[in-house]
Image (cartoon, rainbow, N blue to C red):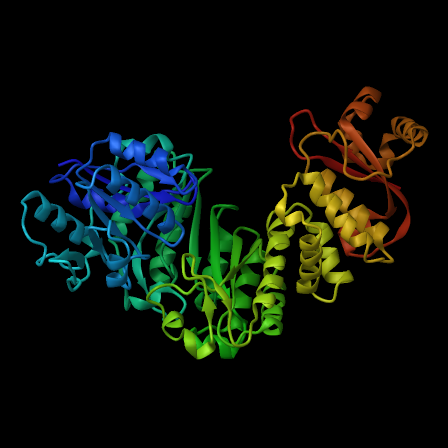
Length: 579
């Protein structure tokens, strides 16, 4: 029997852990091929590749981001060869199972919940041409009727075979994200999350996990993301894994964890700040909302003061990047409340602030209780909300405008100094800056076109000019600084128009050559020739003392110049202020 397990990932760099567990659990009784595709691959190309493998059975791993494209693939396969058995599983099809079976006739089977044992038993029944009534957690049809068998008891995770020891994965370990679990389940019951449905937390064997991590690092894995819903729920377990990774990590490998920040003890953070190499760990922290009523309505327990303490301590340590998540559209969180949530969290200055929108996932409490808050939402994935009793569709549009520019101007860190000045000194709050700029961005039609780096600077400059700001020259100087300091090569044509006059530039260069010590010892040590100055530097006027501002936050107005030197080694620029 020729068996395939596959999925459509959101991006090429992603890998699917579920199909690897299915393959590992089914061996050696069944040999399973695990090709992967992306949602951007043409449907016909995917179908062609699968059909050419001459499968008898194809299993698909289904999620909100791939279900629609997966259905297209399945329906085309069934038209070409109706005898191929189609098995689907995953969180998107594990709930409202009868509806799925009735709506998509091309689904022969749905494996619900944890699929490893169910999938293998199903293959055994298919191979032996036996009935399916004994296969737990399986949905199928019999005499035109949908049958849904009860799920089996949870698997003992300590007995699961490794999903990482396949030779076909080795060539791509360094190029893609590797996902790993050390536990399944979540101790919390947030009503917008599928993890709330499973009660309790179960752990894999700790020593086996360490062996897996050693294997992955030794074979070139660069980014390893832990899928545990709350990695730090057990402090002793988390500390053991942290210590192991600090002791045995391979340089260049990064580990990402989803943590609950308000339960992390200060001594754990202190340990990480003192012991972890910079860049080894990244933390993802779901804040979602700072509205106490909203959190109560979705059964979310959160102490924002303790969360703030954790995020602040980690940031002060300077070792770990933090990605904080917000969800717009939770119950009783109106536009003004979400504005406050955004500002509360932005005040922590996370390296990345992800703004998402509530999705009414199958099986969750918010979907079951949607009518209570007058939710309207998409009928098809990703089931995103379109409004509720306190948040109109127009409000959602406005928040989406914030999301667009937040991603481009904060999360991508193209102009951190400029944005910090704007949100701290020019606009009433960070949210107000992103909202006003986001609305302007949308009005200009820029959301529908692509952008080069220079375009992003020009568009921010255009927006700010129309605000008639008294300190625009200061802001423009900060924008020049951000632009020049992040270039690896000398820019051919910067985004601004008011370039220095050629005569003034020449006179300044000559003055520098005559007295390089005026720019400080670091510049003098470069020993730049006249040819180097003209070939490897950019010089522009500033209307304030940049060094003083970066040092103390004080704006001292005057006539200054900024000199950016681009090293032949193509590292970032070295900048000097000319007084």
